[in-house]
Image (cartoon, rainbow, N blue to C red; front, side, top):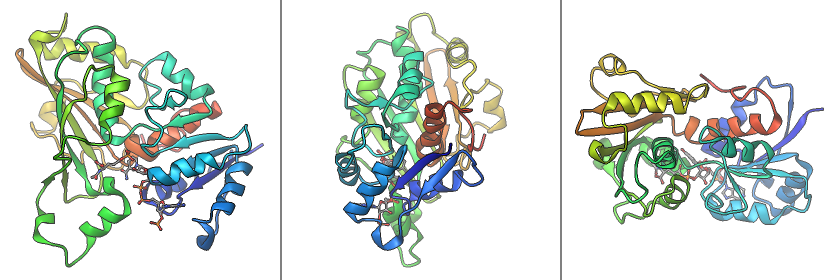
Length: 315
Ligand SMILES: NC(=O)C1=CN([C@@H]2O[C@H](COP(=O)(O)OP(=O)(O)OC[C@H]3O[C@@H](n4cnc5c(N)ncnc54)[C@H](OP(=O)(O)O)[C@@H]3O)[C@@H](O)[C@H]2O)C=CC1
Ligand SMILES: CC(=O)N[C@@H](CCC(=O)OP(=O)(O)O)C(=O)O
């Protein structure tokens, strides 16, 4: 029997990408909503409760509303918004972190897909904090470069407006108040004692991102060099199909430059360790629309359905 999927928010950036990835899948039946009713509460209620799995691709408030419409106890939810990521009764959809995380996705009824910046931070920090290499007290800072599709339809429209202001030509730093919405989940899931200092930069290209976390190696127990850290990450993520720990030689291939769009269109995450024996930089490079959103949602869905984790993904 086919699994009935309803995508709430199917006309948005994430919703459209998710929809595309179901093309040609015979195990899935999409429950469609008509254009004029796509924000109608009663129609959404009907479709959510008729689905096996509803995927929410909505702003936070609308995602909370969708959850409040659930009447059928067997409906499972995958939420791509920020609304439920730090809730104890939701599973955090990052199966590579540990066997416990994978099981929570396999069996969970409420799955919150990680935020894109959070995906970068947590992929780098969870392993070293949980294994005691880096203290949870270490004052983490990080920066990111992201394509403008990360800001959804409204930011895409701003960047693609032919009369846009000159400032859009330049990379722009944001979240200046140090209150980026992903920091709470980074602190909670990576097990940090405080939220990181974080300076994201949005630039004039469509998709793809890098998140980098610099660390003084003297604070890393047993892993004082980039080589040792790389080996550690290699072991930690061994066998994971969506995470690729890059060898040192990769630095030459990218000519010493980390491009924000280096993984655009690809659904995995590349993890780099660069730097030297005193100061290392851990970097996650991926697509904000791939492993950072719709790719991660599809990966979770595949795990929930017990099928190949990478089905419908571009790897
Ligand atoms: N873009 C990205 O890289 C990432 C996005 N996310 C998250 O995914 C979610 C969706 O983001 P994104 O796709 O970028 O956003 P978009 O703004 O591109 O799309 C959101 C969609 O939701 C629709 N919508 C808004 N309110 C309602 C409602 N009450 N009922 C039904 N539909 C509604 C919008 O309608 P309309 O078309 O009329 O505006 C729009 O189509 C957000 O929570 C976002 O933070 C997560 C990770 C990465
Ligand atoms: C460029 C840009 O604005 N990016 C967004 C990414 C938002 C996003 O992906 O947020 P959720 O995953 O939490 O929904 C931001 O930094 O807020």
